[in-house]
Image 1 (cartoon, helix red, strand yellow):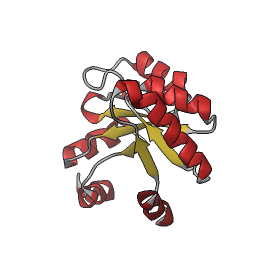
Image 2: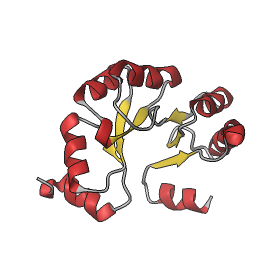
Image 3: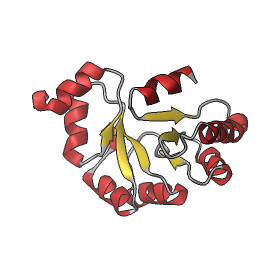
Length: 156
């Protein structure tokens, strides 16, 4: 709750990732979804996971939940149709995708499915440049200074 208060209070976006044991993932995702619902944040906070079944369970429990699943498999060449199908199957607002494995065709297919594409892990200027070049909608990284520098055009 303190982290949610801090981020939401600052007017920033928030994405909560469901992690842990597969056996507990669905229950955890449902609890998180219900907590966000009780706080009136269901339509403001994204929920993500590599466990798409857990996200589906959370969406069943809280229909307005905003989902941003990670692409499966996590790494390796990406099939545009498969990525789009994953986003479409969950009604995802965004599909998270490793930047190294992104291609313009993947971004186009996911966009055609009605979802945004978020690139991660953004940790170099090269990763910013490559992500922007293929048309992603957002980038995810830990180094705020690097992200701001790269997005300001200083990375070119």
